[in-house]
Length: 149
Length: 149
DNA sequence: CCCTATTCGGTTGTATACAATCAAATTTCA
DNA sequence: TGAAATTTGATTGTATACAACCGAATAGGG
Image (cartoon, rainbow over all chains, first blue to last red; front, side, top):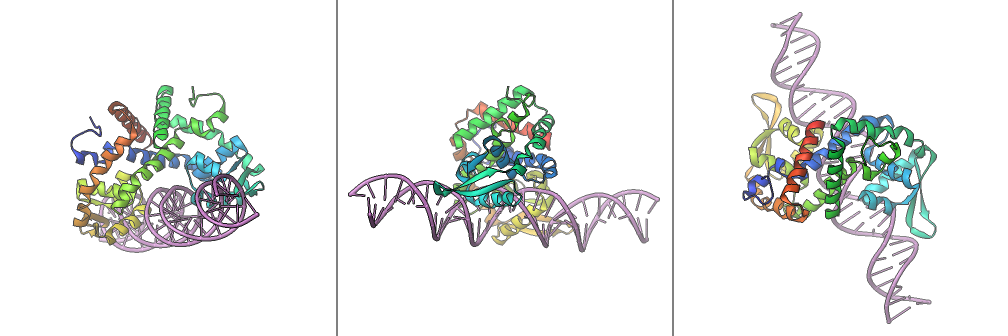
């Protein structure tokens, strides 16, 4: 009954009746929930996302990172430069295509994987979701992601 | 089966197996989906959120806005100052408690409600969700919000 | 082999987010 | 009542986001 097909357009202009605001708020609350764990490793949430991809793939171009994270170069370039300064990764032009920049995981970045492994599990415990609820929600979000992509 | 109780901790360190990343990505994609509509009214998404609350309540303190939007003064103060410059709202100290700042909707801000009314409906059409799916997802997100609050 | 279109990062400028800190006003309670 | 604790915004500094634009490198057609 709180559906977009409702007749009163003003009702739609309330935070509670939208999908958008809870997504916006939840996204920031999750980031805040990660913060104490990430702070202990001295990294930010977007940096953690980049590392997750590099732990899985070792080396990716900026373009590939941007495609997977849905972030553009204006966001990634300075973020990756900060991570380069900490020796977590290296940045170099692809010799076979000088337009691309290869981002490669370095030992200091690899070393962060072990302590980071504990984070998702510790957080999941706080959510109070059953496995079924968790999976249903995850699937719904992925479905929406696919639609909006 | 992609549940946090899974045995392989490395599996949890993948974007696809988390709730957090789809929320983060979806939040930004929604903001981007709103952008063309909001751009036509020359406002940003967080400004639109503030206006939605003021359309409903006319006058709120910065603290109340922060509680409803889960944003702190470091974010709201400059945002509200920009909106004040456009005469969408006024900012003044509460005479009965000089610590509080009252944010009041002005005519120029009120005038934005009518054109904004169309936005949620236009966007909802793009989501390809049934009313039931929409409502289930909304309820799940609110439940999570309540847990993490 | 040229000329044009496209691709890919980088840069700039604006607008959030948010931790940390501060100052003023108010409340509390010894 | 009056000092201490609390509340409330504002400020500062850092880190995203992202639109708009730029330049170098590459690809593609004639």
